[in-house]
Image 1: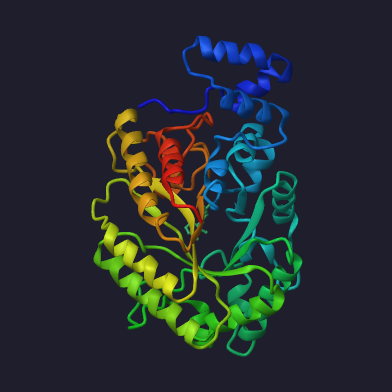
Image 2: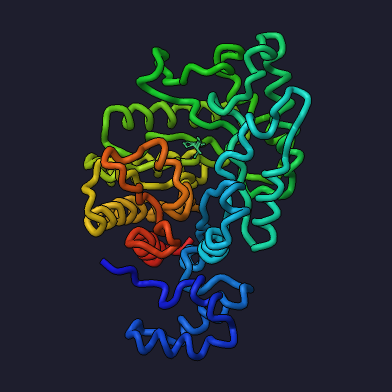
Length: 390
Ligand code: XIL
């Protein structure tokens, strides 16, 4: 399956330069790739670097009142011009993959380090992207000093200080913040409410979640406060339990007047999982929306670890999973944003976390490792095109 876009990549357009646009278009037409007036404009906009091409994912999403963007890390984004160009072309929102996690941002109890986060915020600002924060309270990515310093006496102060300091630093700059990440993990806990074993749970009890949201609302009253979680997608016992537990948690938080505005669904999907039930997902999304919450798809990607090696087959299956999932999710009016967990296969956490047994590179994202759109890109584009207007 060959990608439908672009007629010419941003890279080729940049290499050709603005002066060569007419011949570039002629070349593309000669190559039989159907360069219409629309794509000429897209190409011109791209080459000038002033606006996103009208056929980018961000433009397709924006046409429906949706936001599309992706996670990126400081290292690749600040050194790989092709990756930066791809983000500028396709994304209207950026989320740091690791740079705002506790470990990075507060490496010592009395020292905060915003250097990488600030660079990413500036990148977003200078390319007209929104910026989102990930994540304030999580049981992972905690700094080495954590266990020595945090006791039941100091826990509340350390938690609230961290949230306040980081959110005030980015006050006024954030589209949204993942205030609490992965608090629920059914199957990993004996608790009937599904709450995950967690340092904060041990030290402060289940109220740590409400405390985190109240502290967040005081630190930056103008950003969207999100509860972010995983395993909410499939018709498996684990995901069904997770949906119930997350819905119960959200209901409890709303009932106690906690300032929470949205659910973030990570959506790390699996290309070899067949137990996808659109009706169950629709029902869950509607239940979340009925609590008055917005929904963001925050970390979308499709694991291809157990798919056949054949590239065309593999890409087609990954694209199908994107399409099946997004066509359901985007039908729900409460869904306001979609972010993939990376943009190019060259940089995916799944290269480490779900490597293929045959050693072939993983292909879970919209662009291949040369930044070219794959069938997954087309599937996402089609889902935006088919989505109802917000
Ligand atoms: C992952 C990053 O992508 C990796 O680079 C890092 O080593 C571990 O964390 N759910 C989350 C994200 O909420 O923070 C995780 O990100 C992926 C799963």
